[in-house]
Length: 302
Image (tube, rainbow, N blue to C red; front, side):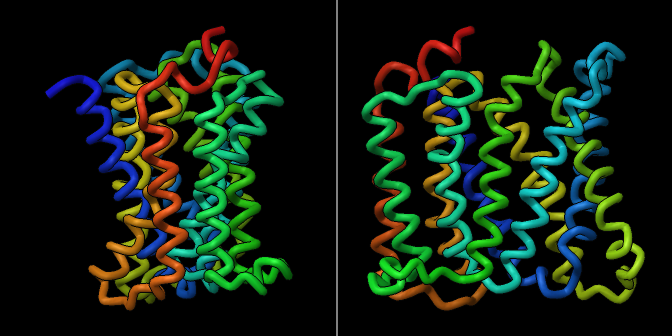
Protein backbone atom coordinates (compact mmCIF):
# COMPACT_ATOMS: atom_id res chain seq x y z
CA UNK A 1 0.00 0.00 0.00
CA UNK A 2 1.39 3.42 -0.97
CA UNK A 3 1.65 6.29 1.50
CA UNK A 4 -0.94 8.29 -0.46
CA UNK A 5 -3.43 5.41 -0.53
CA UNK A 6 -3.01 4.93 3.22
CA UNK A 7 -3.75 8.64 3.68
CA UNK A 8 -6.92 8.40 1.57
CA UNK A 9 -8.13 5.36 3.51
CA UNK A 10 -7.53 7.24 6.77
CA UNK A 11 -9.64 10.17 5.59
CA UNK A 12 -12.34 7.84 4.32
CA UNK A 13 -12.58 6.45 7.86
CA UNK A 14 -12.44 10.00 9.26
CA UNK A 15 -15.44 11.20 7.24
CA UNK A 16 -17.45 8.12 8.19
CA UNK A 17 -16.73 8.59 11.90
CA UNK A 18 -17.56 12.31 11.78
CA UNK A 19 -20.88 11.50 10.09
CA UNK A 20 -21.81 9.33 13.06
CA UNK A 21 -21.82 12.48 15.22
CA UNK A 22 -24.74 13.85 13.22
CA UNK A 23 -26.73 10.60 13.18
CA UNK A 24 -26.28 9.84 16.89
CA UNK A 25 -26.26 13.49 17.98
CA UNK A 26 -29.74 14.09 16.56
CA UNK A 27 -31.04 11.18 18.66
CA UNK A 28 -29.45 12.47 21.89
CA UNK A 29 -29.78 16.23 21.46
CA UNK A 30 -33.23 16.55 23.06
CA UNK A 31 -32.27 14.56 26.17
CA UNK A 32 -29.37 16.69 27.45
CA UNK A 33 -28.32 20.35 27.33
CA UNK A 34 -25.75 20.95 24.55
CA UNK A 35 -23.30 22.59 26.97
CA UNK A 36 -23.38 19.60 29.34
CA UNK A 37 -22.83 17.09 26.53
CA UNK A 38 -20.07 19.18 24.93
CA UNK A 39 -18.18 19.81 28.19
CA UNK A 40 -18.16 16.09 29.00
CA UNK A 41 -17.08 15.27 25.46
CA UNK A 42 -14.09 17.65 25.57
CA UNK A 43 -12.89 16.57 29.00
CA UNK A 44 -13.00 12.86 28.07
CA UNK A 45 -11.25 13.54 24.75
CA UNK A 46 -8.65 15.69 26.54
CA UNK A 47 -7.87 12.82 28.92
CA UNK A 48 -7.41 10.41 26.01
CA UNK A 49 -5.26 12.77 23.92
CA UNK A 50 -3.28 13.85 26.99
CA UNK A 51 -2.49 10.22 27.83
CA UNK A 52 -1.40 9.64 24.23
CA UNK A 53 0.82 12.73 24.37
CA UNK A 54 2.48 11.56 27.60
CA UNK A 55 3.55 8.27 26.06
CA UNK A 56 4.71 9.81 22.77
CA UNK A 57 6.01 13.38 22.77
CA UNK A 58 5.49 14.23 26.43
CA UNK A 59 3.96 17.50 27.65
CA UNK A 60 6.81 20.05 27.77
CA UNK A 61 6.11 23.15 29.84
CA UNK A 62 7.21 25.46 27.01
CA UNK A 63 4.31 24.17 24.91
CA UNK A 64 1.90 25.98 27.23
CA UNK A 65 3.49 29.41 26.96
CA UNK A 66 0.95 32.09 26.01
CA UNK A 67 -2.05 30.03 27.20
CA UNK A 68 -4.43 32.62 25.70
CA UNK A 69 -3.86 30.85 22.38
CA UNK A 70 -5.56 27.72 23.68
CA UNK A 71 -8.42 29.78 25.09
CA UNK A 72 -9.03 31.36 21.68
CA UNK A 73 -8.94 28.01 19.87
CA UNK A 74 -10.89 26.21 22.59
CA UNK A 75 -13.53 28.93 22.56
CA UNK A 76 -14.01 28.54 18.81
CA UNK A 77 -14.31 24.74 18.99
CA UNK A 78 -16.51 24.87 22.07
CA UNK A 79 -18.89 27.26 20.32
CA UNK A 80 -18.99 24.99 17.27
CA UNK A 81 -20.02 21.88 19.17
CA UNK A 82 -22.53 23.61 21.45
CA UNK A 83 -24.27 25.13 18.42
CA UNK A 84 -24.06 21.81 16.57
CA UNK A 85 -26.02 19.95 19.23
CA UNK A 86 -28.41 22.86 19.71
CA UNK A 87 -29.08 22.84 15.97
CA UNK A 88 -29.56 19.06 15.89
CA UNK A 89 -32.58 19.44 18.18
CA UNK A 90 -34.59 20.44 15.10
CA UNK A 91 -32.36 20.00 12.03
CA UNK A 92 -32.30 16.65 10.24
CA UNK A 93 -28.88 14.91 10.28
CA UNK A 94 -28.47 14.99 6.48
CA UNK A 95 -29.39 18.67 6.36
CA UNK A 96 -26.99 19.50 9.20
CA UNK A 97 -24.18 17.57 7.53
CA UNK A 98 -24.85 19.57 4.36
CA UNK A 99 -24.37 22.77 6.37
CA UNK A 100 -21.03 21.31 7.51
CA UNK A 101 -19.89 21.09 3.88
CA UNK A 102 -20.02 24.90 3.75
CA UNK A 103 -17.01 24.90 6.10
CA UNK A 104 -14.36 24.74 3.32
CA UNK A 105 -15.63 27.90 1.60
CA UNK A 106 -15.83 29.70 4.95
CA UNK A 107 -12.38 28.44 5.94
CA UNK A 108 -11.06 29.56 2.57
CA UNK A 109 -12.26 33.09 3.27
CA UNK A 110 -10.74 33.17 6.74
CA UNK A 111 -7.55 31.56 5.43
CA UNK A 112 -7.18 34.32 2.86
CA UNK A 113 -7.76 37.03 5.48
CA UNK A 114 -5.52 35.56 8.21
CA UNK A 115 -2.85 33.68 6.24
CA UNK A 116 -3.02 35.04 2.70
CA UNK A 117 -3.92 31.58 1.35
CA UNK A 118 -5.53 31.52 -2.10
CA UNK A 119 -7.24 28.51 -3.75
CA UNK A 120 -6.48 27.27 -7.25
CA UNK A 121 -9.19 27.57 -9.91
CA UNK A 122 -10.10 23.90 -9.60
CA UNK A 123 -10.42 24.19 -5.85
CA UNK A 124 -12.63 27.27 -6.22
CA UNK A 125 -14.82 25.38 -8.70
CA UNK A 126 -15.04 22.33 -6.45
CA UNK A 127 -15.89 24.41 -3.38
CA UNK A 128 -18.57 26.24 -5.37
CA UNK A 129 -20.14 22.97 -6.55
CA UNK A 130 -20.01 21.58 -3.03
CA UNK A 131 -21.66 24.71 -1.63
CA UNK A 132 -24.41 24.49 -4.28
CA UNK A 133 -25.06 20.87 -3.37
CA UNK A 134 -25.13 21.77 0.32
CA UNK A 135 -27.67 24.56 -0.25
CA UNK A 136 -29.83 22.19 -2.31
CA UNK A 137 -29.99 19.78 0.64
CA UNK A 138 -30.38 22.50 3.29
CA UNK A 139 -33.40 23.98 1.47
CA UNK A 140 -34.77 20.47 0.83
CA UNK A 141 -34.69 20.79 -2.97
CA UNK A 142 -37.34 23.54 -2.75
CA UNK A 143 -36.47 26.38 -5.14
CA UNK A 144 -39.19 28.57 -3.63
CA UNK A 145 -37.69 28.16 -0.16
CA UNK A 146 -34.20 28.75 -1.57
CA UNK A 147 -35.22 31.99 -3.31
CA UNK A 148 -37.07 33.14 -0.19
CA UNK A 149 -34.15 32.03 2.03
CA UNK A 150 -36.53 29.89 4.09
CA UNK A 151 -34.17 27.76 6.12
CA UNK A 152 -34.87 25.87 9.34
CA UNK A 153 -33.96 27.30 12.73
CA UNK A 154 -31.67 24.35 13.51
CA UNK A 155 -29.71 24.83 10.29
CA UNK A 156 -29.26 28.56 11.02
CA UNK A 157 -27.97 27.82 14.53
CA UNK A 158 -25.56 25.20 13.25
CA UNK A 159 -24.35 27.46 10.44
CA UNK A 160 -22.96 29.92 12.98
CA UNK A 161 -21.22 27.01 14.66
CA UNK A 162 -19.62 26.17 11.31
CA UNK A 163 -18.43 29.78 11.03
CA UNK A 164 -16.60 29.27 14.35
CA UNK A 165 -15.16 25.96 13.08
CA UNK A 166 -14.00 27.58 9.84
CA UNK A 167 -12.26 30.34 11.81
CA UNK A 168 -10.55 27.71 13.97
CA UNK A 169 -8.81 26.09 10.96
CA UNK A 170 -6.55 29.04 9.95
CA UNK A 171 -6.17 30.10 13.59
CA UNK A 172 -4.34 26.85 14.30
CA UNK A 173 -1.69 27.75 11.72
CA UNK A 174 -1.56 31.31 12.99
CA UNK A 175 -1.20 30.50 16.70
CA UNK A 176 0.93 27.33 16.68
CA UNK A 177 4.55 28.05 17.68
CA UNK A 178 6.08 24.75 16.73
CA UNK A 179 4.40 22.63 19.38
CA UNK A 180 3.75 18.97 18.40
CA UNK A 181 0.26 18.57 17.00
CA UNK A 182 -0.85 16.17 19.73
CA UNK A 183 0.31 18.55 22.50
CA UNK A 184 -1.33 21.53 20.80
CA UNK A 185 -4.58 19.57 20.46
CA UNK A 186 -4.44 18.58 24.14
CA UNK A 187 -4.15 22.22 25.19
CA UNK A 188 -7.05 23.18 22.94
CA UNK A 189 -9.27 20.36 24.23
CA UNK A 190 -8.58 21.25 27.87
CA UNK A 191 -9.32 24.93 27.21
CA UNK A 192 -12.50 24.07 25.30
CA UNK A 193 -13.70 21.81 28.09
CA UNK A 194 -13.05 24.43 30.78
CA UNK A 195 -14.71 27.23 28.79
CA UNK A 196 -17.82 25.21 27.98
CA UNK A 197 -18.01 23.86 31.55
CA UNK A 198 -17.80 27.40 32.97
CA UNK A 199 -20.36 28.81 30.53
CA UNK A 200 -22.73 25.86 30.97
CA UNK A 201 -22.21 25.23 34.69
CA UNK A 202 -25.92 25.68 35.36
CA UNK A 203 -26.88 23.10 32.74
CA UNK A 204 -24.24 20.65 33.98
CA UNK A 205 -25.45 20.91 37.59
CA UNK A 206 -29.11 20.67 36.55
CA UNK A 207 -28.51 17.52 34.48
CA UNK A 208 -29.63 14.31 36.17
CA UNK A 209 -26.73 12.26 34.84
CA UNK A 210 -27.94 9.00 36.40
CA UNK A 211 -31.32 9.29 34.67
CA UNK A 212 -30.04 9.97 31.17
CA UNK A 213 -31.22 7.45 28.54
CA UNK A 214 -28.72 5.03 27.05
CA UNK A 215 -28.57 6.89 23.72
CA UNK A 216 -26.98 9.89 25.45
CA UNK A 217 -24.19 7.77 26.96
CA UNK A 218 -23.68 5.94 23.67
CA UNK A 219 -23.43 9.29 21.86
CA UNK A 220 -21.09 10.76 24.48
CA UNK A 221 -18.68 7.83 24.32
CA UNK A 222 -18.81 7.80 20.54
CA UNK A 223 -18.12 11.51 20.03
CA UNK A 224 -15.42 11.61 22.72
CA UNK A 225 -13.53 8.51 21.59
CA UNK A 226 -14.25 7.99 17.90
CA UNK A 227 -15.30 11.45 16.68
CA UNK A 228 -12.58 13.21 18.71
CA UNK A 229 -9.55 11.16 19.74
CA UNK A 230 -9.56 8.66 16.84
CA UNK A 231 -10.35 11.24 14.15
CA UNK A 232 -7.52 13.40 15.45
CA UNK A 233 -5.08 10.54 14.87
CA UNK A 234 -6.51 9.87 11.41
CA UNK A 235 -6.18 13.52 10.35
CA UNK A 236 -2.62 13.71 11.61
CA UNK A 237 -1.78 10.47 9.77
CA UNK A 238 -3.35 11.68 6.51
CA UNK A 239 -1.84 15.17 6.76
CA UNK A 240 1.64 13.64 6.60
CA UNK A 241 0.76 11.80 3.38
CA UNK A 242 -1.63 14.06 1.45
CA UNK A 243 -1.75 17.75 0.44
CA UNK A 244 -4.00 19.77 2.76
CA UNK A 245 -6.50 20.40 -0.05
CA UNK A 246 -7.09 16.66 -0.40
CA UNK A 247 -7.49 16.24 3.35
CA UNK A 248 -10.09 19.02 3.36
CA UNK A 249 -11.90 17.44 0.40
CA UNK A 250 -13.32 14.63 2.51
CA UNK A 251 -15.61 17.13 4.23
CA UNK A 252 -17.84 16.78 1.18
CA UNK A 253 -18.34 13.07 1.77
CA UNK A 254 -20.07 13.65 5.13
CA UNK A 255 -23.70 13.86 3.82
CA UNK A 256 -23.27 10.56 1.95
CA UNK A 257 -21.97 8.88 5.08
CA UNK A 258 -24.85 10.35 7.12
CA UNK A 259 -27.29 8.74 4.68
CA UNK A 260 -25.64 5.38 5.33
CA UNK A 261 -25.72 5.95 9.09
CA UNK A 262 -29.41 6.89 8.90
CA UNK A 263 -30.21 3.75 6.93
CA UNK A 264 -28.21 1.58 9.37
CA UNK A 265 -30.12 3.10 12.31
CA UNK A 266 -33.45 2.35 10.65
CA UNK A 267 -34.40 5.86 9.51
CA UNK A 268 -35.98 6.64 6.14
CA UNK A 269 -33.82 8.13 3.40
CA UNK A 270 -34.69 11.61 2.06
CA UNK A 271 -36.46 12.04 -1.32
CA UNK A 272 -34.43 11.40 -4.48
CA UNK A 273 -34.52 15.08 -5.42
CA UNK A 274 -32.62 15.93 -2.23
CA UNK A 275 -30.11 13.19 -2.99
CA UNK A 276 -29.13 15.18 -6.10
CA UNK A 277 -27.57 17.76 -3.77
CA UNK A 278 -25.62 15.02 -2.01
CA UNK A 279 -24.38 13.89 -5.43
CA UNK A 280 -23.01 17.40 -6.08
CA UNK A 281 -20.98 17.23 -2.86
CA UNK A 282 -19.47 13.94 -4.07
CA UNK A 283 -18.56 15.61 -7.40
CA UNK A 284 -16.86 18.38 -5.40
CA UNK A 285 -14.88 15.72 -3.54
CA UNK A 286 -13.71 14.09 -6.77
CA UNK A 287 -12.61 17.46 -8.19
CA UNK A 288 -10.58 18.23 -5.08
CA UNK A 289 -8.99 14.79 -5.10
CA UNK A 290 -7.81 15.05 -8.71
CA UNK A 291 -4.02 15.39 -8.88
CA UNK A 292 -2.63 18.88 -9.24
CA UNK A 293 -0.26 21.13 -7.34
CA UNK A 294 -1.13 21.44 -3.64
CA UNK A 295 -4.25 23.55 -3.33
CA UNK A 296 -3.33 26.35 -0.98
CA UNK A 297 -0.45 28.39 -2.32
CA UNK A 298 2.47 30.47 -0.99
CA UNK A 299 1.35 31.27 2.56
CA UNK A 300 1.09 27.58 3.43
CA UNK A 301 4.87 27.25 2.92
CA UNK A 302 5.83 30.11 5.21
